[in-house]
Image 1 (tube, helix red, strand yellow):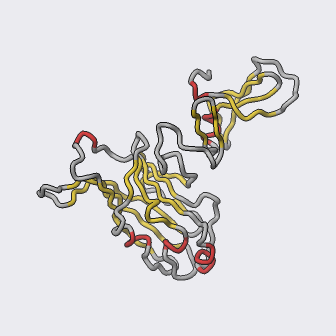
Image 2: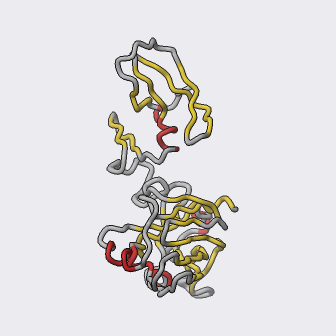
Image 3: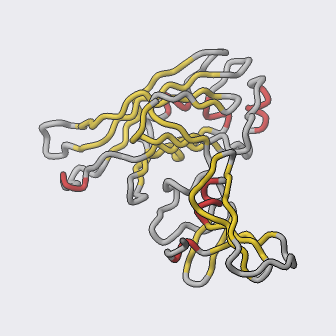
Length: 240
């Protein structure tokens, strides 16, 4: 039942209760039944890491050390900013996500080319997004914690590309009235000499919002984030 190294059992509960090994429980997570079981060993009840992941608890396993929570270091097969590093609101292509200040939607993903037909022709990906203000006053995303360098696409192997540094500011510095919307194609470029076999569709768009230091700007917007994890993570392999 727990046959991989990462299925280490964690989260001891009911310490000291006299249960014997071999007792198991069915699990319901966020109102949904899951296939994994909780088991009792030495009077403590344990659940698998896959359940904690489903609850949004970050973890990393390095050597003989298992680290849980926000301070978890990146796992060996991940890069900073990878698909599992940011606690975020998650959805699919075409799905509107709302964090109390911004309504965010990804509408399209397509291959793009810069300097086509020249020796420095560069491949990339264009991701079209809609960002709509839920504030009560004119607001610019950058002053509510939206980070230019925190807008990335991530691939299945957890490698990432960051949005074009200048182009992304057309989105982050857009001055939006209440209910105003900006539609923009974010551009993510490989190096010009990237082999074609290494160009593959991205798995997720990561849109980081870090509110630290932007409390005054958020307050001035007349709105507030309604979730402790206001960043967005959009799966690009599903559509709603």
